[in-house]
Image (cartoon, rainbow, N blue to C red):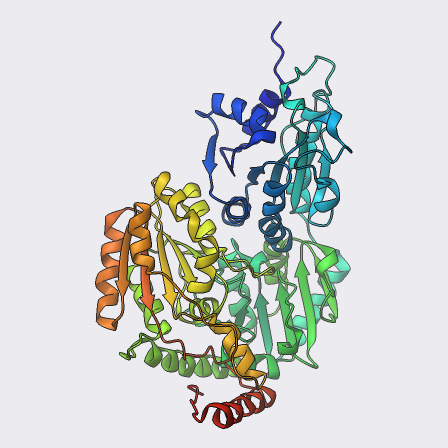
Length: 566
Protein backbone atom coordinates (compact mmCIF):
# COMPACT_ATOMS: atom_id res chain seq x y z
CA UNK A 1 0.00 0.00 0.00
CA UNK A 2 1.32 3.45 -0.98
CA UNK A 3 2.50 5.62 1.89
CA UNK A 4 3.23 9.28 1.13
CA UNK A 5 6.40 10.87 2.41
CA UNK A 6 6.09 13.67 4.93
CA UNK A 7 7.11 16.13 2.21
CA UNK A 8 4.35 14.89 -0.09
CA UNK A 9 1.84 15.05 2.76
CA UNK A 10 2.88 18.64 3.50
CA UNK A 11 2.17 19.75 -0.07
CA UNK A 12 -1.09 17.77 -0.12
CA UNK A 13 -2.30 19.55 3.02
CA UNK A 14 -1.35 22.99 1.68
CA UNK A 15 -3.46 22.28 -1.41
CA UNK A 16 -6.36 21.13 0.80
CA UNK A 17 -6.19 24.48 2.63
CA UNK A 18 -6.49 26.31 -0.71
CA UNK A 19 -2.84 27.38 -1.02
CA UNK A 20 -2.02 27.75 -4.72
CA UNK A 21 1.48 29.25 -4.59
CA UNK A 22 4.54 29.58 -2.35
CA UNK A 23 7.26 32.24 -2.39
CA UNK A 24 10.83 31.19 -1.73
CA UNK A 25 14.34 30.24 -2.76
CA UNK A 26 15.33 26.57 -3.08
CA UNK A 27 18.31 25.33 -1.11
CA UNK A 28 19.96 22.35 0.51
CA UNK A 29 17.90 22.08 3.71
CA UNK A 30 14.53 22.35 1.91
CA UNK A 31 15.24 20.28 -1.20
CA UNK A 32 13.18 17.47 0.32
CA UNK A 33 10.22 19.91 0.28
CA UNK A 34 10.97 21.37 -3.15
CA UNK A 35 10.85 17.95 -4.87
CA UNK A 36 7.22 17.13 -3.88
CA UNK A 37 6.37 20.74 -4.72
CA UNK A 38 7.80 20.17 -8.22
CA UNK A 39 5.63 17.08 -8.64
CA UNK A 40 2.48 19.04 -7.72
CA UNK A 41 3.21 22.17 -9.77
CA UNK A 42 -0.04 21.78 -11.71
CA UNK A 43 -1.89 22.51 -8.44
CA UNK A 44 0.50 24.73 -6.50
CA UNK A 45 3.10 27.08 -7.99
CA UNK A 46 6.55 27.86 -6.66
CA UNK A 47 7.42 31.55 -7.10
CA UNK A 48 11.19 31.84 -6.95
CA UNK A 49 12.19 35.19 -5.43
CA UNK A 50 15.70 36.64 -5.42
CA UNK A 51 15.73 37.41 -1.70
CA UNK A 52 13.80 35.66 1.04
CA UNK A 53 12.73 38.99 2.57
CA UNK A 54 10.84 39.76 -0.64
CA UNK A 55 9.16 36.35 -0.41
CA UNK A 56 7.95 37.00 3.12
CA UNK A 57 6.80 40.53 2.26
CA UNK A 58 4.92 39.15 -0.76
CA UNK A 59 3.27 36.47 1.39
CA UNK A 60 2.15 39.16 3.85
CA UNK A 61 0.86 41.37 1.04
CA UNK A 62 -1.08 38.46 -0.48
CA UNK A 63 -2.77 37.89 2.89
CA UNK A 64 -3.62 41.60 3.21
CA UNK A 65 -5.16 41.67 -0.26
CA UNK A 66 -7.13 38.42 -0.19
CA UNK A 67 -7.61 37.36 3.44
CA UNK A 68 -6.08 34.01 2.46
CA UNK A 69 -2.94 32.67 4.08
CA UNK A 70 0.32 33.66 2.42
CA UNK A 71 3.07 31.03 2.37
CA UNK A 72 6.84 31.43 2.08
CA UNK A 73 9.78 29.08 2.49
CA UNK A 74 13.52 29.37 3.11
CA UNK A 75 16.53 27.27 4.01
CA UNK A 76 17.99 26.95 7.49
CA UNK A 77 20.27 29.66 8.81
CA UNK A 78 20.60 32.68 6.49
CA UNK A 79 17.44 32.02 4.46
CA UNK A 80 15.27 31.76 7.55
CA UNK A 81 16.87 34.88 9.03
CA UNK A 82 16.04 36.83 5.87
CA UNK A 83 12.33 36.04 6.32
CA UNK A 84 12.04 37.95 9.59
CA UNK A 85 11.28 41.43 8.26
CA UNK A 86 8.37 40.26 6.12
CA UNK A 87 7.05 38.06 8.91
CA UNK A 88 7.06 40.99 11.33
CA UNK A 89 5.12 42.98 8.74
CA UNK A 90 2.48 40.21 8.77
CA UNK A 91 2.49 40.07 12.57
CA UNK A 92 2.01 43.80 13.09
CA UNK A 93 -0.63 44.14 10.36
CA UNK A 94 -2.35 41.03 11.77
CA UNK A 95 -2.63 38.83 8.68
CA UNK A 96 -2.19 35.03 8.34
CA UNK A 97 1.17 33.84 6.99
CA UNK A 98 2.84 30.43 7.12
CA UNK A 99 6.64 30.19 6.97
CA UNK A 100 8.23 26.83 6.20
CA UNK A 101 11.90 26.85 7.11
CA UNK A 102 14.50 24.18 6.65
CA UNK A 103 16.79 22.95 9.40
CA UNK A 104 19.80 20.67 9.75
CA UNK A 105 19.03 16.95 9.92
CA UNK A 106 17.63 15.64 13.20
CA UNK A 107 20.79 13.84 14.33
CA UNK A 108 22.87 17.01 13.89
CA UNK A 109 20.98 19.19 16.38
CA UNK A 110 23.25 20.65 19.03
CA UNK A 111 26.51 19.91 17.19
CA UNK A 112 27.13 23.43 15.80
CA UNK A 113 26.43 22.01 12.38
CA UNK A 114 26.74 24.01 9.15
CA UNK A 115 23.98 26.69 9.06
CA UNK A 116 22.52 25.48 12.37
CA UNK A 117 20.62 28.31 14.08
CA UNK A 118 18.16 28.05 16.96
CA UNK A 119 15.18 28.94 14.78
CA UNK A 120 12.52 28.22 17.40
CA UNK A 121 14.07 30.83 19.67
CA UNK A 122 14.56 33.27 16.79
CA UNK A 123 10.94 33.08 15.60
CA UNK A 124 9.41 33.00 19.08
CA UNK A 125 8.46 36.68 19.17
CA UNK A 126 7.09 36.98 15.63
CA UNK A 127 4.95 33.84 15.60
CA UNK A 128 1.56 32.95 17.07
CA UNK A 129 2.49 29.28 16.41
CA UNK A 130 6.10 28.12 16.27
CA UNK A 131 6.99 24.43 16.14
CA UNK A 132 9.78 22.14 15.01
CA UNK A 133 8.62 19.02 13.18
CA UNK A 134 9.84 16.03 15.18
CA UNK A 135 8.65 13.11 13.01
CA UNK A 136 6.85 12.27 9.78
CA UNK A 137 3.82 11.09 11.77
CA UNK A 138 3.62 14.37 13.67
CA UNK A 139 3.75 16.55 10.55
CA UNK A 140 0.13 16.36 9.24
CA UNK A 141 -1.52 17.38 12.51
CA UNK A 142 1.02 20.15 13.13
CA UNK A 143 0.59 21.58 9.61
CA UNK A 144 -3.19 21.78 10.14
CA UNK A 145 -2.67 23.33 13.58
CA UNK A 146 -0.24 25.90 12.19
CA UNK A 147 -2.58 27.08 9.41
CA UNK A 148 -5.66 27.04 11.66
CA UNK A 149 -3.83 29.12 14.28
CA UNK A 150 -2.56 31.64 11.71
CA UNK A 151 -6.14 32.20 10.52
CA UNK A 152 -7.75 32.23 13.97
CA UNK A 153 -5.18 34.52 15.59
CA UNK A 154 -4.40 36.58 12.48
CA UNK A 155 -0.68 36.09 12.62
CA UNK A 156 2.41 34.17 11.63
CA UNK A 157 2.88 30.43 11.98
CA UNK A 158 6.37 29.00 11.57
CA UNK A 159 7.22 25.35 10.99
CA UNK A 160 10.89 24.40 11.23
CA UNK A 161 11.44 21.17 9.30
CA UNK A 162 14.69 19.17 9.68
CA UNK A 163 15.95 18.16 6.26
CA UNK A 164 15.61 14.41 6.80
CA UNK A 165 11.98 14.29 7.96
CA UNK A 166 10.22 15.15 4.65
CA UNK A 167 11.90 12.07 3.12
CA UNK A 168 10.35 9.65 5.65
CA UNK A 169 7.08 7.90 4.93
CA UNK A 170 4.01 8.83 7.00
CA UNK A 171 2.63 5.69 8.67
CA UNK A 172 -1.06 4.94 8.98
CA UNK A 173 -0.82 5.64 12.72
CA UNK A 174 -0.39 9.38 12.08
CA UNK A 175 -3.05 11.56 13.71
CA UNK A 176 -5.80 12.71 11.36
CA UNK A 177 -7.18 16.25 11.84
CA UNK A 178 -9.30 18.63 9.74
CA UNK A 179 -8.01 20.93 7.02
CA UNK A 180 -10.55 23.74 7.20
CA UNK A 181 -11.38 26.80 9.26
CA UNK A 182 -14.77 27.57 10.82
CA UNK A 183 -15.99 31.18 10.77
CA UNK A 184 -18.16 32.91 13.35
CA UNK A 185 -20.33 35.99 13.80
CA UNK A 186 -19.50 38.12 16.84
CA UNK A 187 -21.74 40.77 18.41
CA UNK A 188 -20.92 42.86 21.50
CA UNK A 189 -22.81 42.42 24.78
CA UNK A 190 -26.33 43.91 24.86
CA UNK A 191 -25.55 46.21 27.79
CA UNK A 192 -22.52 47.64 25.93
CA UNK A 193 -24.61 48.22 22.81
CA UNK A 194 -27.25 49.97 24.92
CA UNK A 195 -24.66 52.27 26.52
CA UNK A 196 -23.17 53.06 23.10
CA UNK A 197 -26.63 53.83 21.71
CA UNK A 198 -27.24 56.33 24.51
CA UNK A 199 -23.94 58.14 23.87
CA UNK A 200 -24.58 58.24 20.12
CA UNK A 201 -28.06 59.71 20.61
CA UNK A 202 -26.69 62.40 22.95
CA UNK A 203 -23.82 63.42 20.65
CA UNK A 204 -24.05 66.77 18.84
CA UNK A 205 -20.73 66.73 16.97
CA UNK A 206 -19.89 63.03 16.31
CA UNK A 207 -16.85 61.95 14.27
CA UNK A 208 -16.10 58.45 12.97
CA UNK A 209 -12.50 57.20 12.77
CA UNK A 210 -12.55 54.26 10.33
CA UNK A 211 -9.69 51.75 10.22
CA UNK A 212 -8.83 48.57 8.35
CA UNK A 213 -11.74 46.79 10.01
CA UNK A 214 -14.19 48.86 7.94
CA UNK A 215 -13.14 47.38 4.60
CA UNK A 216 -16.02 45.44 3.10
CA UNK A 217 -18.80 47.29 4.97
CA UNK A 218 -18.90 50.47 2.85
CA UNK A 219 -22.67 50.79 2.40
CA UNK A 220 -23.44 50.04 6.06
CA UNK A 221 -20.80 52.51 7.24
CA UNK A 222 -22.05 55.30 4.95
CA UNK A 223 -25.68 54.72 5.93
CA UNK A 224 -24.67 54.95 9.59
CA UNK A 225 -22.65 58.14 8.99
CA UNK A 226 -25.60 59.72 7.18
CA UNK A 227 -28.00 58.89 10.01
CA UNK A 228 -25.54 60.26 12.58
CA UNK A 229 -24.57 63.28 10.43
CA UNK A 230 -21.01 62.24 11.27
CA UNK A 231 -17.99 62.93 9.05
CA UNK A 232 -15.61 60.01 8.54
CA UNK A 233 -11.85 60.28 9.11
CA UNK A 234 -9.71 57.45 7.73
CA UNK A 235 -6.63 55.82 9.18
CA UNK A 236 -4.00 54.90 6.58
CA UNK A 237 -4.96 51.17 6.63
CA UNK A 238 -8.59 52.29 6.35
CA UNK A 239 -7.97 54.23 3.12
CA UNK A 240 -10.31 52.94 0.44
CA UNK A 241 -13.03 51.74 2.80
CA UNK A 242 -15.10 54.64 1.45
CA UNK A 243 -14.34 56.82 -1.60
CA UNK A 244 -11.93 59.64 -0.77
CA UNK A 245 -14.14 62.18 -2.53
CA UNK A 246 -17.35 61.07 -0.77
CA UNK A 247 -19.06 64.08 0.91
CA UNK A 248 -18.72 62.46 4.34
CA UNK A 249 -14.96 61.73 3.99
CA UNK A 250 -12.45 64.05 5.68
CA UNK A 251 -9.39 62.11 4.56
CA UNK A 252 -6.59 60.90 6.79
CA UNK A 253 -5.40 61.83 10.27
CA UNK A 254 -1.93 62.58 11.60
CA UNK A 255 1.21 63.82 9.86
CA UNK A 256 -0.09 62.59 6.50
CA UNK A 257 -3.67 63.68 7.15
CA UNK A 258 -5.83 66.66 6.29
CA UNK A 259 -6.42 69.90 8.14
CA UNK A 260 -10.18 69.26 8.05
CA UNK A 261 -9.70 65.93 9.87
CA UNK A 262 -7.45 67.56 12.48
CA UNK A 263 -10.01 70.31 13.13
CA UNK A 264 -12.88 67.84 13.36
CA UNK A 265 -10.99 65.91 16.05
CA UNK A 266 -10.44 69.11 18.00
CA UNK A 267 -14.13 69.99 17.98
CA UNK A 268 -15.96 66.67 18.29
CA UNK A 269 -17.89 65.71 21.40
CA UNK A 270 -18.04 62.00 20.50
CA UNK A 271 -15.43 59.87 18.72
CA UNK A 272 -16.46 56.50 17.30
CA UNK A 273 -13.40 54.35 16.46
CA UNK A 274 -14.27 51.46 14.16
CA UNK A 275 -11.77 48.70 13.36
CA UNK A 276 -8.72 50.66 14.46
CA UNK A 277 -6.37 50.97 17.40
CA UNK A 278 -4.95 54.28 16.18
CA UNK A 279 -1.42 54.72 17.55
CA UNK A 280 -0.90 58.48 17.15
CA UNK A 281 -3.09 59.47 20.06
CA UNK A 282 -1.85 63.06 20.08
CA UNK A 283 -4.16 63.65 17.12
CA UNK A 284 -7.23 62.30 18.95
CA UNK A 285 -9.62 64.49 21.02
CA UNK A 286 -8.65 65.52 24.55
CA UNK A 287 -12.14 65.55 26.11
CA UNK A 288 -14.66 63.83 23.84
CA UNK A 289 -16.63 60.73 24.79
CA UNK A 290 -15.24 57.71 22.94
CA UNK A 291 -16.70 54.43 21.68
CA UNK A 292 -14.37 51.82 20.19
CA UNK A 293 -15.52 48.88 18.05
CA UNK A 294 -13.05 46.04 17.45
CA UNK A 295 -13.40 42.32 16.88
CA UNK A 296 -10.47 41.79 19.26
CA UNK A 297 -11.22 42.83 22.89
CA UNK A 298 -7.47 43.15 23.48
CA UNK A 299 -7.35 46.21 21.19
CA UNK A 300 -10.11 48.14 22.96
CA UNK A 301 -8.75 50.90 25.20
CA UNK A 302 -5.17 49.72 24.62
CA UNK A 303 -3.84 53.05 23.38
CA UNK A 304 -6.56 55.57 24.11
CA UNK A 305 -9.15 55.76 26.92
CA UNK A 306 -12.69 54.82 25.88
CA UNK A 307 -16.08 55.18 27.53
CA UNK A 308 -17.65 52.17 25.81
CA UNK A 309 -15.95 49.20 24.21
CA UNK A 310 -17.86 47.08 21.70
CA UNK A 311 -16.13 43.74 21.08
CA UNK A 312 -17.62 42.49 17.84
CA UNK A 313 -17.50 42.52 14.07
CA UNK A 314 -17.63 46.04 12.70
CA UNK A 315 -20.33 45.30 10.11
CA UNK A 316 -22.71 43.52 12.47
CA UNK A 317 -22.19 46.06 15.24
CA UNK A 318 -22.75 49.09 13.01
CA UNK A 319 -25.84 47.43 11.52
CA UNK A 320 -27.32 46.99 15.01
CA UNK A 321 -26.57 50.60 15.96
CA UNK A 322 -27.92 51.86 12.64
CA UNK A 323 -31.25 50.17 13.35
CA UNK A 324 -31.46 51.52 16.91
CA UNK A 325 -30.21 55.13 16.97
CA UNK A 326 -32.12 58.35 16.32
CA UNK A 327 -31.51 60.20 13.07
CA UNK A 328 -29.70 63.51 13.59
CA UNK A 329 -31.57 66.55 12.36
CA UNK A 330 -28.82 69.11 13.01
CA UNK A 331 -26.16 68.95 10.26
CA UNK A 332 -24.34 72.16 11.19
CA UNK A 333 -21.14 70.43 12.37
CA UNK A 334 -21.07 68.09 9.37
CA UNK A 335 -21.55 70.95 6.92
CA UNK A 336 -18.77 72.97 8.55
CA UNK A 337 -16.42 69.98 8.18
CA UNK A 338 -17.46 69.51 4.55
CA UNK A 339 -16.77 73.18 3.76
CA UNK A 340 -13.29 72.86 5.25
CA UNK A 341 -12.68 69.71 3.20
CA UNK A 342 -13.62 71.51 -0.02
CA UNK A 343 -10.96 74.14 0.77
CA UNK A 344 -8.45 71.34 1.37
CA UNK A 345 -9.24 69.70 -2.00
CA UNK A 346 -8.90 73.07 -3.72
CA UNK A 347 -5.47 73.56 -2.15
CA UNK A 348 -4.30 70.08 -3.20
CA UNK A 349 -5.61 70.52 -6.76
CA UNK A 350 -3.34 73.53 -7.25
CA UNK A 351 -0.32 71.47 -6.14
CA UNK A 352 -1.26 68.67 -8.55
CA UNK A 353 -1.12 70.87 -11.67
CA UNK A 354 2.17 72.59 -10.83
CA UNK A 355 4.39 72.60 -13.97
CA UNK A 356 7.65 73.09 -12.09
CA UNK A 357 10.89 71.28 -12.92
CA UNK A 358 11.96 69.12 -11.13
CA UNK A 359 8.51 67.55 -11.18
CA UNK A 360 6.40 67.89 -8.04
CA UNK A 361 5.50 64.48 -6.55
CA UNK A 362 1.87 65.57 -6.30
CA UNK A 363 1.80 65.93 -10.09
CA UNK A 364 2.95 62.32 -10.46
CA UNK A 365 0.11 61.02 -8.30
CA UNK A 366 -2.41 63.09 -10.29
CA UNK A 367 -1.16 61.40 -13.47
CA UNK A 368 -1.38 57.96 -11.87
CA UNK A 369 -4.99 58.77 -11.00
CA UNK A 370 -5.71 59.43 -14.69
CA UNK A 371 -4.57 55.97 -15.86
CA UNK A 372 -5.39 53.74 -12.88
CA UNK A 373 -8.42 51.50 -13.36
CA UNK A 374 -11.32 51.57 -10.90
CA UNK A 375 -10.29 48.13 -9.59
CA UNK A 376 -6.51 48.58 -9.70
CA UNK A 377 -4.21 47.21 -6.99
CA UNK A 378 -1.96 49.84 -5.39
CA UNK A 379 1.03 48.60 -3.40
CA UNK A 380 2.54 51.64 -1.70
CA UNK A 381 6.02 51.78 -0.21
CA UNK A 382 7.01 53.70 2.92
CA UNK A 383 8.32 57.27 3.09
CA UNK A 384 7.24 60.55 1.53
CA UNK A 385 5.56 58.49 -1.17
CA UNK A 386 3.10 57.33 1.51
CA UNK A 387 2.09 60.94 2.20
CA UNK A 388 1.65 61.80 -1.47
CA UNK A 389 -0.49 58.71 -2.10
CA UNK A 390 -2.53 59.14 1.09
CA UNK A 391 -3.38 62.75 0.24
CA UNK A 392 -3.47 62.92 -3.53
CA UNK A 393 -4.74 59.58 -4.82
CA UNK A 394 -8.53 59.53 -4.60
CA UNK A 395 -9.61 55.97 -3.95
CA UNK A 396 -12.84 54.65 -5.46
CA UNK A 397 -12.91 50.85 -5.81
CA UNK A 398 -9.13 50.23 -5.81
CA UNK A 399 -7.29 48.11 -3.25
CA UNK A 400 -4.53 49.86 -1.27
CA UNK A 401 -1.88 48.00 0.71
CA UNK A 402 1.10 49.18 2.69
CA UNK A 403 3.28 48.12 5.60
CA UNK A 404 1.16 50.15 8.00
CA UNK A 405 2.49 49.18 11.45
CA UNK A 406 6.05 48.00 10.79
CA UNK A 407 6.40 50.65 8.05
CA UNK A 408 9.25 48.79 6.41
CA UNK A 409 10.93 50.29 3.39
CA UNK A 410 10.95 47.96 0.41
CA UNK A 411 7.40 46.62 0.72
CA UNK A 412 6.09 48.19 -2.51
CA UNK A 413 7.57 45.87 -5.14
CA UNK A 414 6.91 42.54 -3.31
CA UNK A 415 3.36 43.74 -2.66
CA UNK A 416 2.83 44.37 -6.37
CA UNK A 417 4.18 40.92 -7.25
CA UNK A 418 1.71 39.37 -4.81
CA UNK A 419 -1.07 41.59 -6.13
CA UNK A 420 -0.55 40.49 -9.74
CA UNK A 421 -0.47 36.82 -8.70
CA UNK A 422 -3.67 37.26 -6.67
CA UNK A 423 -5.45 39.26 -9.38
CA UNK A 424 -3.88 38.39 -12.76
CA UNK A 425 -6.52 40.29 -14.76
CA UNK A 426 -6.18 43.59 -12.86
CA UNK A 427 -3.86 46.56 -13.16
CA UNK A 428 -1.19 46.46 -10.45
CA UNK A 429 1.04 49.36 -9.46
CA UNK A 430 3.93 49.60 -7.03
CA UNK A 431 4.38 53.21 -5.96
CA UNK A 432 7.80 53.62 -4.38
CA UNK A 433 10.36 56.17 -3.37
CA UNK A 434 13.91 55.61 -4.57
CA UNK A 435 14.97 54.62 -1.04
CA UNK A 436 12.32 51.93 -0.67
CA UNK A 437 12.64 50.61 -4.21
CA UNK A 438 16.41 50.33 -3.84
CA UNK A 439 15.98 47.85 -0.99
CA UNK A 440 14.11 45.20 -2.98
CA UNK A 441 14.69 46.21 -6.61
CA UNK A 442 16.51 42.94 -7.35
CA UNK A 443 13.12 41.22 -7.36
CA UNK A 444 11.96 43.20 -10.38
CA UNK A 445 13.47 40.29 -12.33
CA UNK A 446 10.96 38.04 -10.54
CA UNK A 447 8.15 40.00 -12.19
CA UNK A 448 9.94 39.64 -15.54
CA UNK A 449 10.54 35.91 -15.06
CA UNK A 450 6.89 35.16 -14.30
CA UNK A 451 5.56 37.68 -16.85
CA UNK A 452 3.76 39.76 -14.24
CA UNK A 453 2.86 43.08 -15.95
CA UNK A 454 3.26 45.24 -12.86
CA UNK A 455 3.99 48.96 -13.20
CA UNK A 456 6.57 50.30 -10.75
CA UNK A 457 6.45 54.07 -10.28
CA UNK A 458 9.63 55.37 -8.66
CA UNK A 459 9.62 58.89 -7.21
CA UNK A 460 13.32 59.52 -7.66
CA UNK A 461 14.73 62.49 -5.75
CA UNK A 462 18.11 60.96 -4.85
CA UNK A 463 17.18 61.37 -1.18
CA UNK A 464 15.81 59.54 1.80
CA UNK A 465 13.50 62.51 1.76
CA UNK A 466 11.26 61.85 4.75
CA UNK A 467 14.31 61.48 7.02
CA UNK A 468 15.71 64.71 5.57
CA UNK A 469 12.48 66.48 6.55
CA UNK A 470 12.48 64.87 10.02
CA UNK A 471 16.05 66.03 10.64
CA UNK A 472 15.14 69.56 9.60
CA UNK A 473 12.03 69.66 11.80
CA UNK A 474 14.26 68.63 14.72
CA UNK A 475 16.34 71.74 13.98
CA UNK A 476 19.25 69.84 12.46
CA UNK A 477 21.06 70.06 9.15
CA UNK A 478 20.27 67.02 6.97
CA UNK A 479 22.98 64.37 7.01
CA UNK A 480 23.36 60.91 5.49
CA UNK A 481 20.23 61.22 3.34
CA UNK A 482 21.74 61.54 -0.15
CA UNK A 483 21.28 58.55 -2.45
CA UNK A 484 23.38 57.60 -5.47
CA UNK A 485 20.87 55.98 -7.80
CA UNK A 486 21.19 54.18 -11.11
CA UNK A 487 18.94 55.03 -14.05
CA UNK A 488 15.99 52.86 -12.99
CA UNK A 489 14.51 52.89 -16.50
CA UNK A 490 17.69 51.40 -17.97
CA UNK A 491 17.78 48.94 -15.07
CA UNK A 492 14.27 47.78 -16.06
CA UNK A 493 15.45 47.18 -19.62
CA UNK A 494 18.52 45.30 -18.39
CA UNK A 495 16.21 43.00 -16.43
CA UNK A 496 14.10 42.31 -19.53
CA UNK A 497 11.28 44.73 -18.72
CA UNK A 498 10.33 48.17 -20.00
CA UNK A 499 11.71 51.44 -18.68
CA UNK A 500 10.52 55.04 -18.94
CA UNK A 501 12.57 57.98 -17.69
CA UNK A 502 10.50 61.10 -16.97
CA UNK A 503 12.14 64.45 -16.21
CA UNK A 504 9.50 67.00 -17.30
CA UNK A 505 5.78 67.30 -16.44
CA UNK A 506 4.63 67.01 -20.06
CA UNK A 507 6.36 63.61 -20.30
CA UNK A 508 4.36 62.11 -17.45
CA UNK A 509 1.04 61.21 -19.07
CA UNK A 510 2.55 59.69 -22.28
CA UNK A 511 4.87 57.50 -20.17
CA UNK A 512 2.03 56.28 -17.94
CA UNK A 513 -0.24 55.64 -20.93
CA UNK A 514 2.42 53.59 -22.69
CA UNK A 515 3.14 51.64 -19.51
CA UNK A 516 -0.45 50.53 -18.99
CA UNK A 517 -0.85 49.59 -22.67
CA UNK A 518 2.25 47.39 -22.94
CA UNK A 519 1.20 44.60 -20.53
CA UNK A 520 4.81 43.96 -19.52
CA UNK A 521 6.69 44.60 -16.27
CA UNK A 522 7.92 48.16 -16.37
CA UNK A 523 9.49 50.91 -14.28
CA UNK A 524 8.57 54.58 -14.63
CA UNK A 525 11.54 56.48 -13.19
CA UNK A 526 10.30 60.00 -12.38
CA UNK A 527 12.80 62.64 -11.30
CA UNK A 528 10.99 64.63 -8.60
CA UNK A 529 11.74 67.66 -6.48
CA UNK A 530 13.82 66.69 -3.45
CA UNK A 531 12.86 69.91 -1.67
CA UNK A 532 9.11 69.22 -1.70
CA UNK A 533 8.42 68.58 1.98
CA UNK A 534 5.46 66.51 3.23
CA UNK A 535 4.15 69.42 5.28
CA UNK A 536 1.55 68.26 7.85
CA UNK A 537 -2.07 69.32 7.42
CA UNK A 538 -1.73 71.22 10.71
CA UNK A 539 1.73 72.55 11.65
CA UNK A 540 2.49 72.60 15.37
CA UNK A 541 4.50 75.31 17.08
CA UNK A 542 7.24 72.76 17.89
CA UNK A 543 7.54 71.79 14.22
CA UNK A 544 7.74 75.41 13.10
CA UNK A 545 10.26 76.26 15.81
CA UNK A 546 12.41 73.26 14.94
CA UNK A 547 12.42 74.13 11.25
CA UNK A 548 13.37 77.73 12.06
CA UNK A 549 16.29 76.42 14.09
CA UNK A 550 17.35 74.26 11.12
CA UNK A 551 17.24 77.24 8.72
CA UNK A 552 19.37 79.35 11.07
CA UNK A 553 21.97 76.54 11.25
CA UNK A 554 22.05 76.27 7.46
CA UNK A 555 22.38 80.03 7.11
CA UNK A 556 25.33 80.20 9.54
CA UNK A 557 27.13 77.06 8.33
CA UNK A 558 26.41 77.11 4.59
CA UNK A 559 25.48 80.74 3.95
CA UNK A 560 22.12 79.94 2.28
CA UNK A 561 18.48 79.56 3.18
CA UNK A 562 15.70 77.57 1.52
CA UNK A 563 12.08 77.97 2.62
CA UNK A 564 9.69 75.03 2.46
CA UNK A 565 6.20 75.49 0.95
CA UNK A 566 4.59 76.31 4.31
